[in-house]
Image (cartoon, rainbow, N blue to C red; front, top):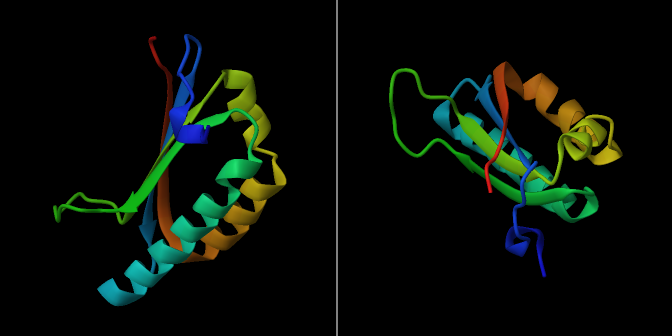
Length: 112
């Protein structure tokens, strides 16, 4: 069973992050987005409690659109908190930091 197939139970928490990337062209931002997506996908099986990960570049052009977004579901708030200091997450933060101009986040509990 992969992470995507696990049943999401009461107490699971969604973690949504969006980034504006600092590339000077659409092509450069697309390349940055791909590097970030590859890093997230490589670390997904290493993170305890991560039940789901969807990540992708913006698909609809709009004036307020961000370049890249990630939707993650953790089994519990404790799993999300543990993720914050997980070596895989720290490596992603080090990768993304120099490529982003802005970041937004929202976390909320899911109902069963």
